[in-house]
Length: 253
Image 1 (cartoon, one colour):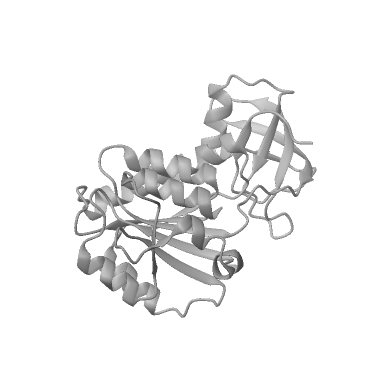
Image 2: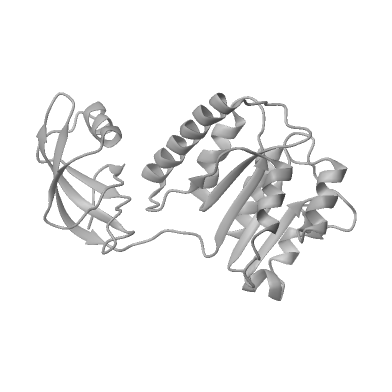
């Protein structure tokens, strides 16, 4: 069974091979001051034969900037959510998006779509958005290393909400796919009750749309509902955007 610290290693892996770890994993091994003979676990293989699961490995050599390992057995174990979960969210202010990415990864989200909405406080130009995207993706990797997931969620590039709607409507949804939008409107369905319905139980893929601080604008919410998003609520209390997103993922996982 794989043991030791876990490292993301997005290269072709197979039992019996020796390889130099990618830079990120190598730096992590060095920070932990692991020595030759130390046991580690690798995941993220890009090999078609061993796509998924995790590998036991042993450190065989340490250089100043490189770490060599011997890959041993493959364990096909997966720790994914029961259904495919997609989160689309208006970017919350300050460092809350970092926290959200970490916790959503732990809860099993498959993809995260950061959105610029009417009430989004954070405004990102192309260069800053690219840096944020790389930062959020690294947070997702670290969260997978910690929580035991072997599949790193995809953080999509930041999009304006209207552009995201446009892209979604250009692709017909799968029958088992459901789209939900968080809403405070009286006609909203209680998400806890919806998950117990036939539709909720049969949905193999769920996209959950949530606004930033203050929620979506009325026109944005109306557009989402017109586009097939079912309005849902999380009860009588008004939660922060990042809290609401995580509460929804917990109910849907």
